[in-house]
Length: 206
Image (tube, rainbow, N blue to C red):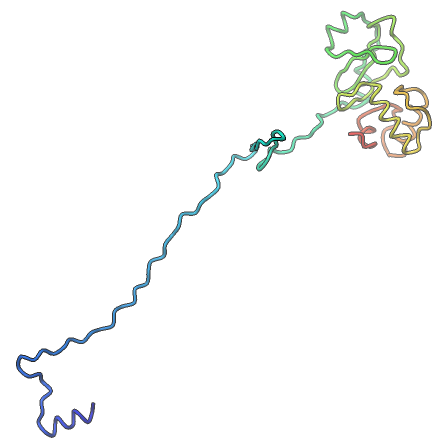
């Protein structure tokens, strides 16, 4: 290019275009076009209120799934054995009195029992012909079990642990109460010689 300019200067040539000659325009390179980012909508799962349970139905029934309600204690607060013992009605009443005061009365073994605050109590006088009890104090129950069923489970557990050596009778007699006292002492429980909530729980019967 420098040589061409020098020659033009020496020989008087002009770099101007001739009349009527069109000088082609300089073409600039096209700018690079960057496509704008495309934003796709985010699909979100519907928010389920806390503390609710979603139910899915299947051929096998209905089962809870997803968010579950807060776990609530399966067993309500239970009255202590000492308080239950003080609450026990030891006086005799006729059938009408018991029915007016308690809704759950059952016949087990040789007598009638009424249910109150998680315990079975002898219903003295409910039926004079059936008024015999091996143990006249409260018997703690769980799982809607009758008195003899609770006693039977306790006897079986004490038998497996080596504290009881008698037959599984479902009766809270002297041998069963002695086994209960020995177990309660070794387990660090209050020694009552009776079936109470801490003993049932320590035996793993829940």
